[in-house]
Amino acid sequence: AQSVTQLGSHVSVSEGALVLLRCNYSSSVPPYLFWYVQYPNQGLQLLLKYTTGATLVKGINGFEAEFKKSETSFHLTKPSAHMSDAAEYFCAVSDRAKAAGNKLTFGGGTRVLVKP
Amino acid sequence: NAGVTQTPKFQVLKTGQSMTLQCAQDMNHEYMSWYRQDPGMGLRLIHYSVGAGITDQGEVPNGYNVSRSTTEDFPLRLLSAAPSQTSVYFCASSRFPENTGELFFGEGSRLTVL
Image 1 (cartoon, rainbow over the protein chains, first blue to last red):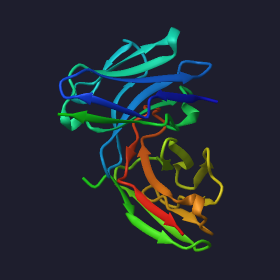
Image 2 (cartoon, each protein chain N blue to C red):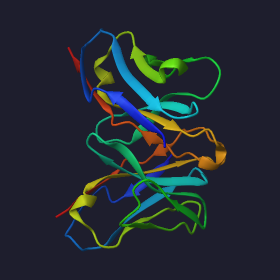
Image 3 (cartoon, rainbow over the protein chains, first blue to last red):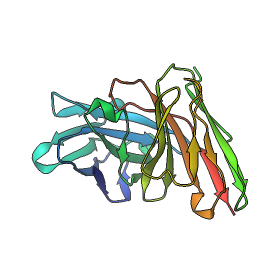
Image 4 (tube, rainbow over the protein chains, first blue to last red):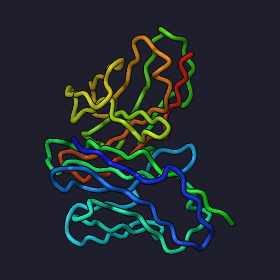
């Protein structure tokens, strides 16, 4: 069974500072990898995803993530935090087999607080 | 564009009561699913469907029923609510069988069971 671990349930950063959110997965075969963001009182929306090809993936709002197979990691970064980045971020994985559909396994989430 | 619509947004139940959470999507997505969100546990899959008439269990199906009579609708039923079912519930949809992982989420339904 797949599992996803996000280190740190809460992260506090200053506006303009680097945002780094860590995600490690456990899977016998490299899965598809995703980062979702949830703003207060809203549903989740896709930030970025890795399926194949280039291991550095760019997403919306200046975020990017790098797939490192040897480390089974998919950490999310943004060079300069903005107040609007305050939200909860979820790392997720899914099985590459089409029969699995779009069943995602989510990590526990990391809530980001941005200080002025 | 409506996307995925969930009703109600808030609900309070007493233990043992039943209710249905409604979910409708207007994107002609074959795949629909229900997740529950609990603090520190992320989202956990309850049930999913890959098309009308086809449903299957996810990670935490106990205490919940689903049906899929149309492509657009995927209601989640709680037959006898328990305090452990206090949670925020999200419906999500996507294309299928394209396994892109891009789920489109509703805004959630917050359920409290007393």
